[in-house]
Image 1 (cartoon, rainbow, N blue to C red):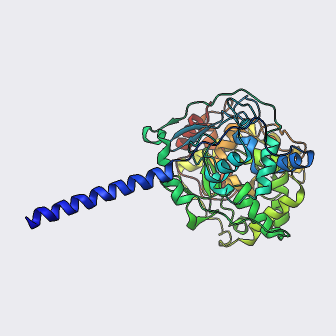
Image 2 (cartoon, rainbow, N blue to C red):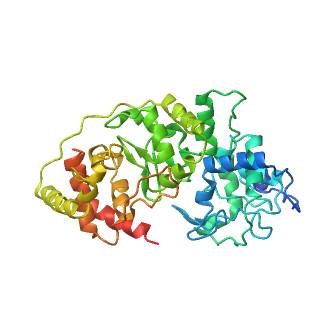
Image 3 (tube, rainbow, N blue to C red):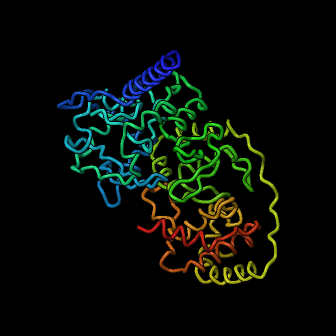
Length: 427
């Protein structure tokens, strides 16, 4: 009898724990819908809208919220993740498919908590964990700016995610782990404090430049230690003094505002639109970002280049790569070429793409090139060679430049990498 009573107590306690867990879960997952508004509930004055444009450019909003050949801010950009593909949403003031009936309060909740106006949880590909740092005034200005964009009717595309992740309430536990109120700058903040605000908040730099764990959260112990996005390697931002030619603060300011650093290379891949946006913001914002990043440098300086091991296969790579380089690349990058003679163009020997630990950036730059600049201050351009060179030729030329120009050990399995990246980057 005592044993039976004990089992009933255990069963009752277990049931109670399950009920309490269910209550906690729904308390975390459920959020009320916010009432729609008939018009924006903040004054859309020229000064506030202008400040909002600055905030949008610092946050690169248009980059993610504009799909291929789509209207600006109307969403539809595919974001490939380890869990499937997400499509960004329409943030124009269209009342049916955008945020035209959102109040400032609803907008603020979405930005800081990852909850849409209707109470639906947003996927953390939207970096709301960083926007907890953003001040009320900046969110208000951003809201005003977006509400003055042209309304575009663009229904959201269906996400293509693993089946369990289609159940959005599951995100409540992720939010419990990663959504925390962030510090915000005070009035009269120093350039370093302002830079920290821009890097950790609006710029959400660690979204790309910090490695992620198995559930897509940033690894806090390796903040800005380097990551990967769309196949590109996002370099560590706390090791700028560890480059073959250590960065200077002035070079970083130039790179962030023009896309070119004289001794390091040109912005490519996902970083390209970032610098195009930064080219339009006040220079003091870019200088503040650079000041903060130089305040956190803590990794060892660049080690001397190891000599590549001699082998017949490597010699064949280098020989073939030299031939490809002279035929396809030397016109711009060869000794004595017009571009190499231009004092602002960095030599390939110092290029971060060819000195990095991963070959991805070098391969993707050859495959995709650098698009024609959309801003007058961004001057670098390179044609894409995906339709010109074979996988073997690309593997040869990047190996040749890695070994002969940068003097670094050859990357392993470059042929395989080229084939994979070509497939992944195809439309």
